[in-house]
Length: 161
Image 1 (cartoon, helix red, strand yellow):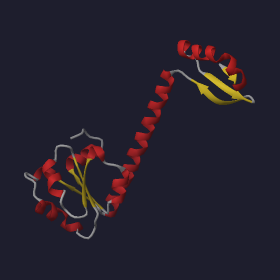
Image 2 (cartoon, one colour; image 1 turned 120 degrees about the vertical axis):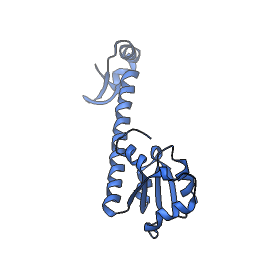
Image 3 (spheres, one colour; image 1 turned 90 degrees about the vertical axis):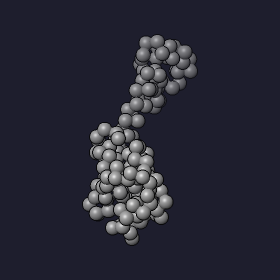
Image 4 (cartoon, helix red, strand yellow; image 1 turned 90 degrees about the horizontal axis):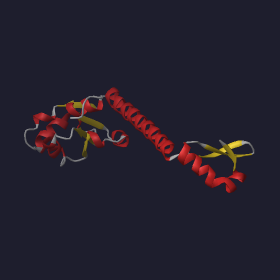
């Protein structure tokens, strides 16, 4: 259904009833061109879901591109966080030795890898983030990236750790 912006003033209640009860969509026009629409709450919710899905896909693609760039540059390392049986900063420092001059370093862990997280948290110019909270900006900011095997599995589309 189309209505001119001028005529909507007199027929607003009718337009709202048709949208709410019948699921119609009302296109408001000015000079025969659509300028706005009145839609049901269900249509609005569906539109918002589609926008959210598109945002998630775009963010995932950007994150994957940034990870690929680290891999191509040789600034991405993968390690087994289960080897950290207890929190030990010296073990974390030893693991970071090959990238000593390439800081800041971002360590990406799966949620259950607490000992590794505690081991890296006190290392200078090193940040620790859960794979569930990893943002594109974090990956881009880091000069080096150290990712646990479980976190990499999650990033690659596997099951969350």
